Image 1 (tube, rainbow, N blue to C red):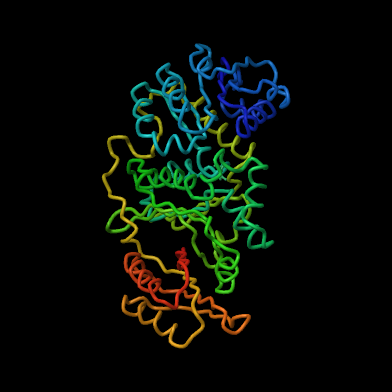
Image 2: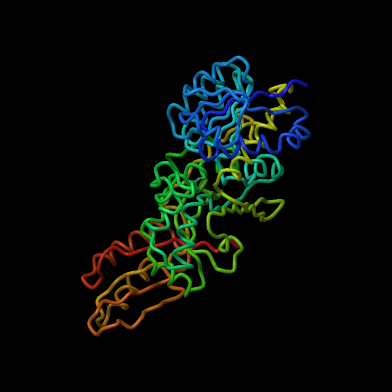
Amino acid sequence: MKPVKVGLLGLGTVGGGTAVILKRNAEEIARRAGRGIEVDFIATLDASAATNLGIDNVRLTDDAFEVVNDPDIDVVVELIGGYSPAKELVLKAIENGKHVVTANKALIAIHGDEIFAKAQEKGVVVAFEAAIAGGIPIIKALREGLAANRIEWLAGIINGTGNFILTEMRDKGRNFDDVLAEAQALGYAEADPTFDVEGIDAAHKLTILSSIAFGIPLQFDKTYTEGISKITLEDVAYAEELGYRIKHLGVARRTEAGVEQRVHPTLIPKSRLIANVNGVMNAVLVKGDAVGATLYYGAGAGDEATGSAVIADIIDVARTLTTDPENRVPHLAFQPNELADIPVVSMDEVETAFYLRMTAKDEAGVLAEVTRILGDQNISIEAFIQKQPENEGDDVNIILLTHRVNEGDMNSALKQIEALDVIKDEIMRIRVEELS
Ligand code: HSE
């Protein structure tokens, strides 16, 4: 059978990894796909990148639209990232009747509904396994492996850079900025690293996971997004002392009121497997009503790890080239006309336990005032730490772990506590999830 001709847009970290694996494992991949898969045309601004990777016998261009418009190309693999021109390129490829594989989570989270509608109209596939959790086949697992289940919740460490930073802070006491610089040098971080540290990258991924898990439209604007930039070394140490690890989690949960869709730093009991996912590794825990809890773990970023997911998609596309478009796996797991209008609930309605760290004047009655305000909001305290100040008269750190509370009630308590004269600065609060 004629080989499938691939047009690669971008030859950076993931593009390079993809091209190298396709060459190295060509025979094994052809045995699986039932035909050869060949990179035929590459769009890159750096022509020497192909030579450096040992990729030869390919056409090169610096104009990605040339690839998208080339009649010989069957599958366009978009690895440029970002919103534009990625969106225009993908839409043009679809219009030209080409299948698309992408690792672009931002594109899918924001423009996915439009892109999938267009793909459906044209009878082509847009595959995006590599967009989430690097090499972990989490889309495949959720969309196909768990198709029998009503998904109850999922929780994932889905940003490798953030996890790497938190791990290095905990294990080596390293400074936030140094670790971020290392993640950038290793090619893990986004072009704009604020996407990693402020949780935007994780929010893109969670938006997609939530849609696939619950059969709802992609709603990035409704995903609550908080990053790790305010986490301090002392928070990491206090969490350990309380028996927890701080992880940046994406959580999607079905509740009676709707769907919770949120990314934020989270304290998780140290004993949970997911609390022990370190460095750039990712993991996603999914709870289905029939299967129970399942955990997916692996490299969340990197050239060949992400390339592995890209190629799995290309192989899927190669196998479906001749199938009836009506019988393909739906892009978002549920049939497009079956997406449900379940609301995404506001954070005020979300219930979690909380870790609180506040700086207070070391004087009589402070703790009584704080606990009175919490008590008035029915917030019950589970654990408490107060360390003796180094010097008499210094401010003290008060650390509290609360039982589960509605976030709206917690916000109103924190406002009152912060208004006390004896409390300095903003109170640090981190949500706690038991994930049991
Ligand atoms: N910047 C992302 C991360 C890359 O660190 O997880 C993979 O999506």
